[in-house]
Image (cartoon, rainbow, N blue to C red; front, side, top):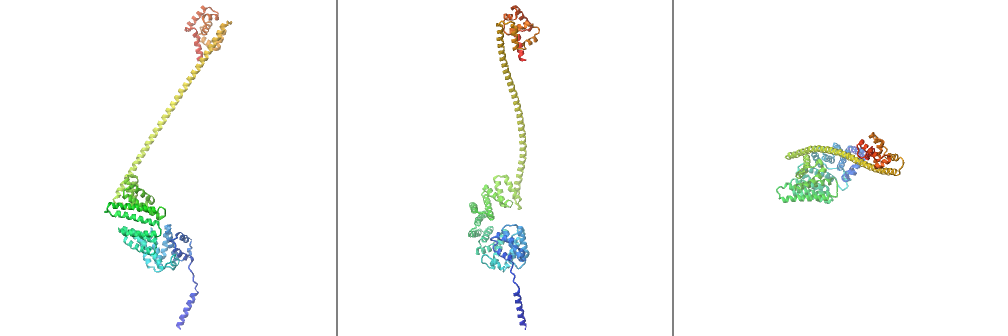
Length: 555
């Protein structure tokens, strides 16, 4: 009876379950797992899909899944770190302490990358502990994988990525042995599954870790293993990094092997230069964020090497190339190399510039602090002296300018004065010449007039015209109209007969001829001449009127 009731109940349950309709997951949820299988290879495409995905249909669990996938995609694309941190925090709120160990570990691992988290190493340790507890993953990660895989392989990929990052963190923090342990695990795994790009990262980091503990053979061994992986995938930048690693190795040996032969240490420096130049030549035709970083590593190594070789110009050339790119985040070692080079070259300005950068670093420069401060203060004092000297020089130049302006002004005044006087002299000379010319013309005209007058009066005399004196007087007045009136004015005591004698004497008539023209005897004419001399005080009677002619002409 009891048995039949049990079977009846079981049948009813089976019938009820069959009646319940199976609801498939949303298409957006399925898309998340598809993208998780290719977002590392195609982050741009994955981000575009994630950015347009309708997350309102997703469950709380899948929203957390969406946040962690989008955060990892944005991290690959070097996008806004604030948004990435917000997405990781949202994912952590759900996955922390949940049964989803795979995504819990992924969240801790991703949070260990946050620069704003002070205890990043703790999150990486939590990621390691969590992934080691993980036994299963969603089957869709296996189903949608681009390469054949299984659940354990999916778990291992995340686990060894955590090993790799944790090892790098330990090495960077100075825990070299712990770091080497995890890096060797990741290096061995990636080499066994032929994931060459991740393998070379572990190998190169192992090489660096071994060089820090002075195990040079192991360092070179893993450096070459990294090169093999880089060559296998044709990654030129990582092949170039091998040469940078060899350069680092040479410089490290040079610094640590203080008791080595000097020729051997110099050979290490030459080898470092050759390796860096080989790396730069390999990267000459490629670009990218990582490539640019490798170029800066090469230039910094070259700067350091040339400083050690005391080739300071070359040290400055490569060092300034790095400093121009890195700016305030340039390493203390680069700044010290530049400081030493500029100081050796006697470049006070750049020595002070680099010393100021060193003093602004948070690290204590120890014994060098005082020397750096002295250099900076001395240069500042030198600049102050230069400033004062410059101000004084400006004042001197202003004074010289005023003196020059005054001199030019004075010279201009003198020049204008000279030109004024010269013009006056030229004008006076021109007037004098004009006066002489006019005087000569007047004399010439007067002479011609006198000649014509003499001809006419002689003609009158020879023609025995009646009343010849009157005609002669008329001709004379036509030429010298004021002469007779002037003579009367100056010598009012002269009679008309005496004036006639003066006129005819001026016209060069002889005593007899004068008597004929005036109708007097020669004795009478002689008496008149004596009277004229007595009254005028002029000995030559003909000159009495000549003076009046000159006076007439001057007037």
